[in-house]
Amino acid sequence: VLDDAGAALTRLLEGAGTLVVLGSGAASLVAQALAQTAGWSIPGEAGIERKSRPRLRFHDNLDPRTLTRAIQHLDLDYARFLLLSPADDHTAAAQSTAVVAALRSRGVSPETRVLFAGALSPTAAVAMSGAAISVLADASGTDRGWPLPIGALLPAIAIGIDADAVLAGGRAMVAAC
Image 1 (cartoon, rainbow, N blue to C red):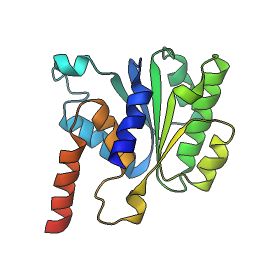
Image 2: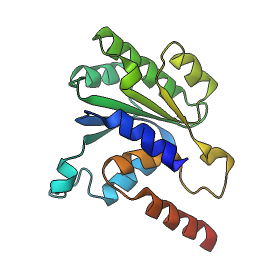
Image 3: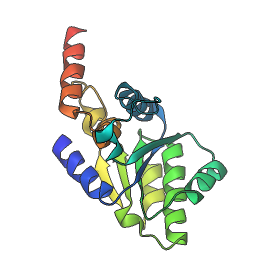
Image 4: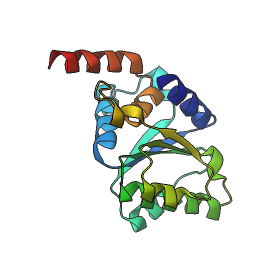
């Protein structure tokens, strides 16, 4: 699963200057926590290697108006979107609809700019219908031995965190508990 996720992320980030992470719940919070352990959004922590990677922005639990305004201020030629969704999450469905609509209204193809990672709920599937964007299923909901949702690891991978090491640490903690 991690190899497929890494390959999807690599395709998504081609030519990217900014990775906008949208979502809610644990996947978004875990992704933010992992990014912060690597210095994301901490002044003075962006080293040379990090500067060569896309900027990372988290927008979680936004109302539609705020999300629309946030998207309007992005340079969509260089922006990519990662939508993180727990099962049956209406926030992700609303966010995905807003992102796809904003991209299309500005003549940008969502097919190359959006990756949806998570448990694709029926609500999100309806919102995504007609948009042939990449969907990465999250196997974490069915395997209690899998310590982290794959979607939460993608922003970490994007800024250079070793996901295998994170997973090994998570498995060790699960085993210890």
